[in-house]
Amino acid sequence: GEDVEQSLFLSVREGDSSVINCTYTDSSSTYLYWYKQEPGAGLQLLTYIFSNMDMKQDQRLTVLLNKKDKHLSLRIADTQTGDSAIYFCAESIRADDKIIFGKGTRLHILP
Amino acid sequence: DTGVSQNPRHKITKRGQNVTFRCDPISEHNRLYWYRQTLGQGPEFLTYFQNEAQLEKSRLLSDRFSAERPKGSFSTLEIQRTEQGDSAMYLCASSSPLGTSGHNEQFFGPGTRLTVL
Image 1: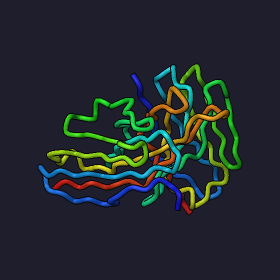
Image 2 (image 1 turned 60 degrees about the vertical axis):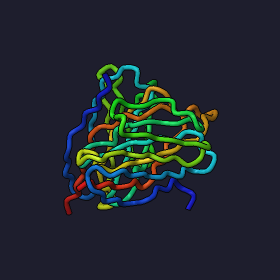
Image 3 (image 1 turned 45 degrees about the vertical axis):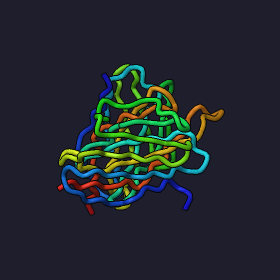
């Protein structure tokens, strides 16, 4: 079945790196995503990685994929207060298919 | 603003009443998705349309729920005989036809928050 698991909370000091981890069960997953949700705002796609990639970097964001272990991580370098949000790991089998989301990791930034 | 819009943004209703939500996708997006998000959970897929055709329905979509997209543009989601367990944020998303990139982002609307008393 389809399942995406991630830890619920993470606290990080401002300026440090944040690493949010996720595991998924569906080996057919082709696209793995990270979404950001801020209070009162809609879901925002941060980045995605295709299953034949190991890593993707986009400015302060680095995504690592271990397909063998079905493990996905998101690293946010130089974490800022504006990064405080809920981060959802998600997957889909096809590019235009339904998306299966995890429960979200709430990132809290310490001063 | 040319993003996905949803109306109403908030709806409070009494148990047993019927409610209808509307989603207006981004212009020319042929796929439209409905998700439901309860407190502390991630969004859960309900159903999606390609143009006016409803292609997939989740088992979460009981027979009290019905979704339509009659002209392939806006969509409505109706819940009949609402129950307290229906209280949630109902999210709509749309995406454009697949292009050469092989991936098309789903753009999410702000959601309709339903509270069933």
